[in-house]
Image (tube, rainbow, N blue to C red; front, side, top):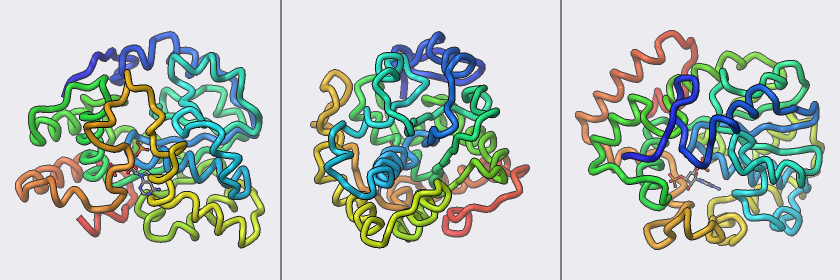
Amino acid sequence: MSFDHFNYKGVRFVKGIHTEESLNHAENEFEVFDDDIYNVTFSKSGTNWMIEILNLIKHKGDVTKTNVTPIFSRSPWYETASFKEREKKLVSPRILTSHLPHHLFAKSYFNSKAKIIYTMRNPRDVMVSLFHFTKILKIYTPAENFQDFLEDFIQGKVSIGSWFDHVKGWMQMKDDDRFLFITYEELLQDLRGSVVRICKFLGQELDDAQIDLVVENSTFKSMKENPMSNWSKAPSELVDQSKGSFLRKGISGDWKNHFTVAQSEYFDKIYQEKMKDLNMSFFWEQSS
Ligand code: A3P
């Protein structure tokens, strides 16, 4: 896989979508407000799903209020070059998205009371999702084959660099009251329970009927059928809808349809090495 990129402080970014200026602004100048909510992920980990959930929670499940903006511009990525224009139109409490690694995140965040929700996903499924995404997003030249892509992913030669570094960096905050980490797999297994947990973390009091609405409107089926959530409104210069859908499968374990046994063992070995210092265990370590 290749894409027009540049390195910023050791991390690979997409040229045009990000600029040195936008990253410097995000890290050093951007002002975080105490009531901001940040949706932070490594790409393909459930970023848009969390955008949907957080906006529905904000509007007590009322989809007519969230459907006023297509999902990809509803909670903008604050590190992107296009953010400046969007920033002025945001209404507090702001819900913002970011793929930034921990060490490049807004410095002003660390002196604020703002909250972060960090969504993670089995890296094998992240890889598969990204592999397919590179075919529809026009900024990418897809990899020749899955093996090449696997190497790129392991070496952090994808947008936002290394998945391993991203997770390890953000997990430094795991015991911070302002930080909630959740997995894509937990959302899949128990969406209602996850929504309740997120509401509690945010201090949002929704009644049972409102929680039901958040859940109903954020299922894979609802989002896939919702033109404001399924990326069908994404600019054609950016997305080739004929090559696949953004909401592709929405399942856990699709990696089993892509990895050979040898690739799986190889990935396992790298995973063990890279994650050994992080004293945490994740759902996918038992099930892969
Ligand atoms: P797949 O390609 O495996 O289907 P991101 O938003 O971080 O780019 O992640 C995109 C992935 O999240 C895609 O995975 C997409 O289908 C999945 N996704 C988005 N909304 C979802 C939902 N409501 N339920 C399950 N998966 C969802």
